[in-house]
Image 1 (cartoon, rainbow, N blue to C red):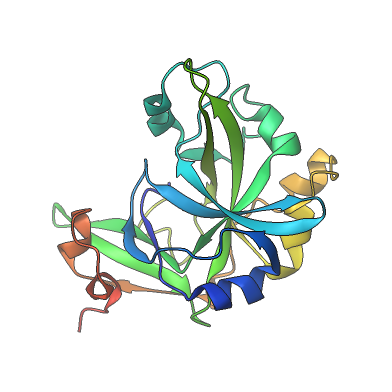
Image 2 (cartoon, one colour):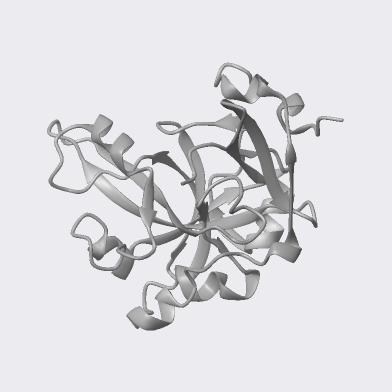
Length: 222
């Protein structure tokens, strides 16, 4: 699964990598992003890539409470195109969740130790996701989203059996384009990211608490 990640890159870098042409003009840095927070997503609107903030935890249109999104912070690649909760969004409301890295926990001697995963390049990347504009019973419209997961690659398998789907930059346009409806073409993207392009290392247990939000969270333990 993907239940915790971080984003600290400057807005200018994010704008360049994702070819932004509109949306919010700043993203607050956080080294400990948790479900229920507003996170940065990229969508394509009118042919342009836009950055917006969206509640992490997908809420289908028929749900009555925003809190129900905690059950759907992730969507499995194997079922996302068919599951009623995600089927329509998979067809028309695809997004990229912007991150610099994510955390997983490995079990050693009965203790869970956090591991940080990021691109060797040090650049931010797009985790493949879906979004939905949910309307509350009071008529308030809220953007909600989920991150799609797939089988872990060989590097991550000893730590966790799942990982977020990371989109290669040359596939950003394909995933974001709402005009693309070929299910098989989209499903081909939902695979583990190459081991050789990722780096992972153990970090401090400070990250275990969402209250700890600083660059210390991603520092390698010597």
